[in-house]
Image (cartoon, rainbow, N blue to C red):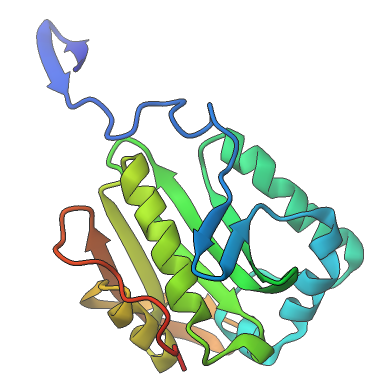
Length: 209
């Protein structure tokens, strides 16, 4: 329990849901979701990052993308630092040495045990349950390490992500009006969330459209 003295009054604050150092004291784990492997990004993945950034669907729904090999290497290189700073984590989703997509846990709030799940899947791997299985495995890892609440936010114009959220057991909590600016303008966003103590487990392996 943390305590702070303010003008002669002792105020108590809850201990953080995830103590500082619990994540960074270990290397980022390699996770398994059936035949899929979720591993940290490698410099050799730079061409895949460039292909993803050139894909119209990924560009439409993701505001950050790379335009050169140097940018792609810098994007890859940031993740180790962000892991050690306990800010974010990102995994390459791999099948038989081929990168199919990405799943990340962004914006760690260790005090409240909260973070946001994000992902993208390359065109050749869509419709095969990759997003559901990979994000579901990251959610299980996050709850095991001490996170209490995970959010998934997507444009209301992206029904495929809404289906993924539903299969993961992330309840739709509401609409954030004009909350995110994409390349084509401001978008209303659906807010989904899943709690560590929600019943059931995320569905895995179903096509995510």
